[in-house]
Image (cartoon, rainbow, N blue to C red; front, side, top):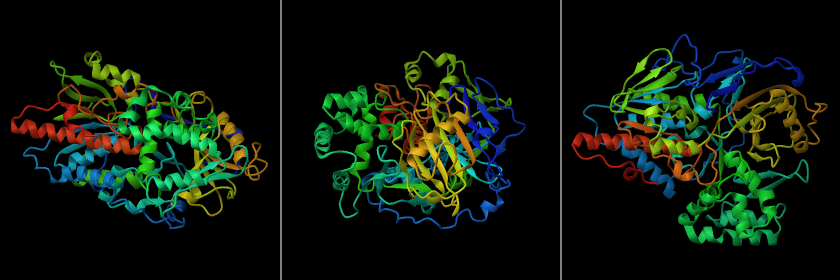
Length: 577
């Protein structure tokens, strides 16, 4: 999310086939409160009788078939007995089993993304009363999605749920919505740039435990790396395998490219594997990404048998994931309000928070305050009196990376695709999926809708949608040489949506790890949540949920200590990673 703009391109859906070069666009931009107040005539508060976010449009025809079981989903993997899942479940249950507060805290939370909603959910579980304030008119933050006039959804990003996301998986189970995850076969599928239209697969056998199933998947793939390259790659990884977490943390100062050179890993490993992996993890290339990020991902995916197994949500994230969290919060006495943008954090004379001042003139007061907005937005809101405090000053190093999400509806069903996430290995694209196959709500038996992550996007974020679509089509012509041509002489575009996020997840460059803040700030009663805060899953949905848990844990424990008359413990003492 941009330091100046939370943006999406809201393009009216086309009713008939037309060339992308002639489409007209309208922009719907939600600016940061420190730059421009969002002009709204009302504030939406979710109540127990609210129908939620259902956007009644011309898409009622899609609503009738939204959740048909049409995709060949694979069984849910047995995650419940894994150590990480059990530990995540114990943290969740600690909120439900904690002693009920004699006076519930009213906790004001800015931001209704996964971090803010998770913070509120677990505070409500512990008996407190959260009030979530969302600046925009849609839930989800980086999971936000919108419905166009045809009833089709378009999203902020292509969201994949991994088996190695124990807190996310627990959250789904706690809400009773685990069946909304559509699990795919345990494979990673890469396009082959030197063989247009062909793919290379890493298939993880179900009969082998971790990490042997991952080793087998790598060894069986002979299309991307030669045996000598695999051996050199394995030797390069030996220090990480033997050195454990201490070694992983020590690599934060190196980029992926620098680490590879230091370890003597062949350049082709970078070209064949790490470019695609880096763009999928953080939307940047290996010459910028911290090696720590790669090693953490490899550790999560290879140490758990089902860690790299992927699932798609069965529909749009605001309704299918965020609304169940909202309903849970409301059922326990909490509130979630849309169109409630913070203009300023007002302080008391002692430097603590007095209230959150909204752009509509409202002042929201609580017993504790949480900012769960993206780091770039929060930096704009930091009061002048706090800016020289090292906790806040270190945030300058954390900067969101630009991301573009592209959706293209074609006039036919594409054949050269899978019901799975695909690594494009394109210079401009990161990953993509045919959502008409992979997602039940988006299913279409006659036409494909490709959702693609355009990354790295820094040089493209300011360009027109037409330029972005033209560049995307050139890349798709390489991936689908028999079906797609850049001039649309083959598959034709029915319509498209381009969603630009000028500042998304924080850019995981070397030496930014020490700058990530604990959830409990040095300001009494003020906390942070978000995937950029200190937790072990980096910038991800899992990281956002875990940060919300840690934030709620901090508030609950500090309140318990305060009520018992004990001294408050420093933030580091209550964060266990």
